[in-house]
Length: 255
Image (cartoon, rainbow, N blue to C red; front, side):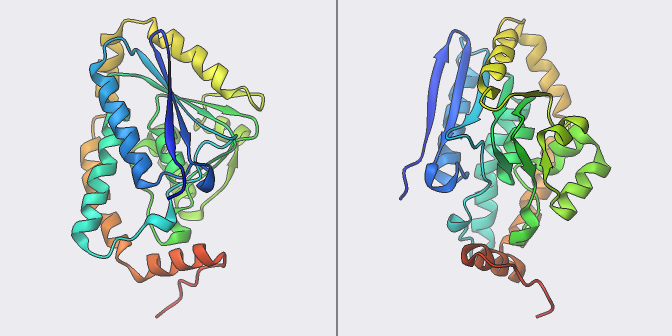
């Protein structure tokens, strides 16, 4: 297995987490998701942690899910995969600790999902955002059907989902997907500054505000769990995955 890890760094009340999976440009392989869940869960009960920064190593935030590890062959497997992943989204969206994303380079698919699960998105001017799930025969997941419309509105989210539109940082900021743009290489410092501000605030109002804004998340995640499992088992996903691994365009025509 290629080396993958989440690096942790503490500075006062701020915990910085760095996705580091260089072989797949920080793709969210299942072991990486499990590690992220465990760290986030521990942070919830550590009252000394008042804010989190989430970033990626090597000038890339996250290139999406690890397609090579998507091997769902039956319904129970798909449902369990989604259950395990949704634990992360609940902690990020509804948990007490505010999270700031520091995005450099690509933020695609599952990467876009975890960025949108953060409370603030800081992006370098070279950042690129795209949903892109349709190319592998899947629908958006990791809470993105809930978090993206909440950020940019239903109409704009629909265009990103249906057309796989790629946005640069400036376009993403114009529609509310990004909260702050900084020069290339500066996302982590800017995100850390925001996290330090949040860490100095009263924690209870922040936690309760996050809970209110998360209303409706549970229903969205349950629908997503059922629908994405159906997609995992579809011929379209089999074709999309095969095309991705072969580096060719998928053929989703009649079969």
